Image (cartoon, rainbow, N blue to C red; front, side, top):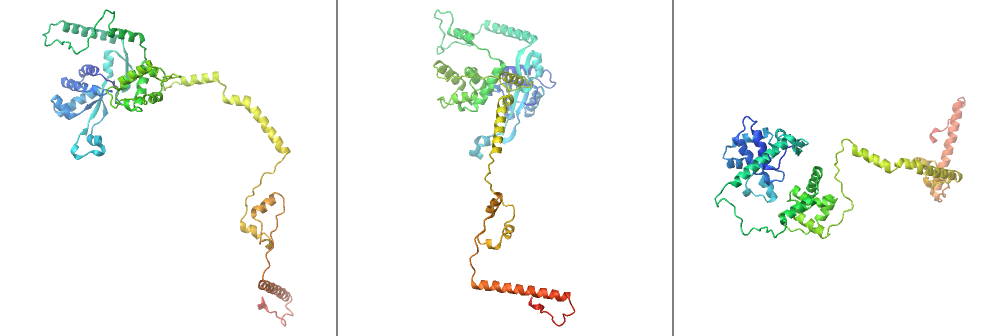
Length: 449
């Protein structure tokens, strides 16, 4: 589907017409291929996108052909560009997925079917005189050429002639369809137009033309809206977009639509959500129950490959507003510079000492080793000493140590006397080594130190 050159088809008649035209150009395709195409066309109405499931076993039973024949003619349709893969079939049990955690072996097995998308080859569009916008699967039919218009007029005249001939034939009463008494009949009571004709003329007078881009935007918005509002999931995107068209054209955004539709009292089971939405919108508009929308929403495309929207935005902005930098340079920058210069001048005239919070820049052991011994009892903290140095003050000395006991004083005194004695003996020993002549008779006792 993402690689094919053919465009998407949603109507069975278009697919069969393309199949009749293209089968003539394949050497192996024939009536059997056309029968398989008709089987695919009969299933297209089940999906809003026209996709058809391809169950080989069911198709074999439906057409009365062999499995190999069905697969071969499906391959011919793919080679002609008439069908494209949406999903490949697999051996995964679809019943297990459907029942989820409640699956039991008694439910059996059913493989996942292949899903095909009927498509129209470019050769058929060219032969019919179609004008195509885009390429590939998402291409759209936007009109016909002159040759295509002449061919369509001739085909319409041929169908009208055949229809007239069939109506002129005389049929037996068993073939003619009679009108049942239970069917409502439109009775003309002397007025010019019947209700159906009056309704048709009124719709013609109030019809608002919608461009293909607006229609595409409305369908995309509706598909996103169906993921937000629970009761819209079963509706087709196209009829629902048509039902919501009055609100979309009035400027309602996706968020506003979701907020409004979520508040409606919707029955639990709706047979046609699009018809219900159309009826409710008409009723609420007639009774003025819908909230007004002040700003209409635009449908500008998001693609801007040439950069025209961006250039137009820049021109509009430069025409309406002054850039922020120019406003700053012209109005704000001179005043800011004057204020900064005044602040600097005041700071020079009145210097202020900031609250200094010193940071320890050396190890604590080295710091305490540099202090006098008598200040270790109640020494100031490093932060206090650094703060005093930064402020030009003398750090305060700590309190003296408490008086020691008698035994400690005696030990300190003995240690001091021993240190002085050892110093005297070392001095005498140094003098004897300097004069070795008279040193034999008085040898100092070196063991005392």
